[in-house]
Length: 530
Image (cartoon, rainbow, N blue to C red; front, top):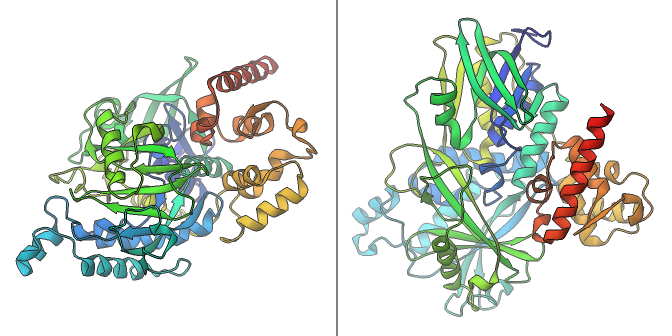
């Protein structure tokens, strides 16, 4: 073990930030035998990484900006990740209705090229161009698991039944869903299992750069202070990456981030089938409408430059109205604010490439290495689909400081609970119900979709609902909460119902209060035992 190892003299890598990039890097580094500490000032995935549109996708519209490398990498990763986490990710079909008024948003490289060749198009997205983009989307990434694009007659297909009659034709293509905050937690768990130390509610307040490494100062939520020596620091602060760099680490960098707010609304279920919609607006923007948590529909996202606190973004009234109006231009029955049951918003730390609009800003990532003294690697930008490749590239940057360290290993290695076939959810659910007769099918499927092959470890030898302890509602029981507190770093009701799950959509205020009290009492019992 290089540079301090586990002998108390320090660690190899200190990661700041418990979002998907930080946890992905920690997992990759720990799996190569490096000693790792990760510090997150709040809960894991408490910011951007729990507020995405929850898709593993190549980014179809990025092709209009000629970001072919990014799209190709994301498409390849899509299937790599499906195999590694078939419980928390799965394929979905997206229906893209076509109409003549589809336009580019502002000026893109593609629209500029078309205006030169076909000036009569006047900024429109023609059907042949969309079909060409989908052909590239089908073939850039060596697709094997997912079906390709088809053309749909909306006058006959069930997907057209809920749309306005003027939409007669659509293209249907494949992309994938992912439970974003669970992805973060499972990466953190795997990193911990491989030797990493994961600290939540632990803020890095300062760090001293020395010739032989860093001394990082941490303040825990209970007021304890701690110092950790590390050879390399990785700044994966997400929306705070610049603040960490300049204020906490007191370093300069030519790279910067552009904070872009993406807001979403969740409505009562708007349709009964399991397909998603990809809607294009007359303003050139796009949104998705996606089946969500069984009884709901997720609609988003917006793209707005964000000037406020990145830790407390809100879906504004204007954004919610915009999303309702956008969806209403497609659905037969208008989507109103009365349909909305929840909203959420996240701030994406995009690499600042000087683009004119938030939508046009690159979704690619930049890894900035400062090795003038003790090495410092800062992560700018990125998207959830490419987090594993970002982690590999980050390790490539710092491995020269750790000679003899093994190479890539994460591709195809399942995350906790994901050690079963891509098409194995139905079988696993059936086996679970056969063993635990008191589980309803929706309950069993929820558990499999969250924990995969680890569900039996949570339920143990239970023969009835009563054996699982206190029932908090919404199929959440004491047995599951104990697991989340012991194994998945959960410390509050919010951690449980909004990041480890989305059961906050189903629990009332009294049920949440009861859960919070139970968790506080459980923590107190543990503290007394210690």
